[in-house]
Image (cartoon, rainbow, N blue to C red; front, side, top):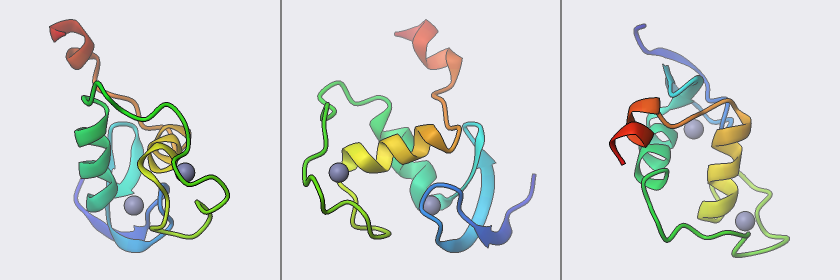
Length: 82
Ligand SMILES: [Zn+2]
Ligand SMILES: [Zn+2]
C-alpha cells in the first residue's frame, strides 16, 4: 500500500498515511506505537488527566490508547519472540 495524503485515524492530523499495525495512521503515530508497544515501563494511567484533549497534546498513555482504539495491534511476532 503506497502512502496517501489523508487523515490519520489516530491523531486526526492530515498527513501521509499508511496502513500500519492494523490502522491507517501517519508516520509519527506509527513510530510512536512501535516504540511504545515494546516498552516495559509504559505508564498505566493518564499522566496529565483532563489535559489530553487536543491533538498532539496527549500524554504517552492517551496517545497509545488512541492507537489501540483506532485498531492498531502489535505484530504477533513480537509476542512470540518475547
Ligand atoms: Zn497520527
Ligand atoms: Zn493522558
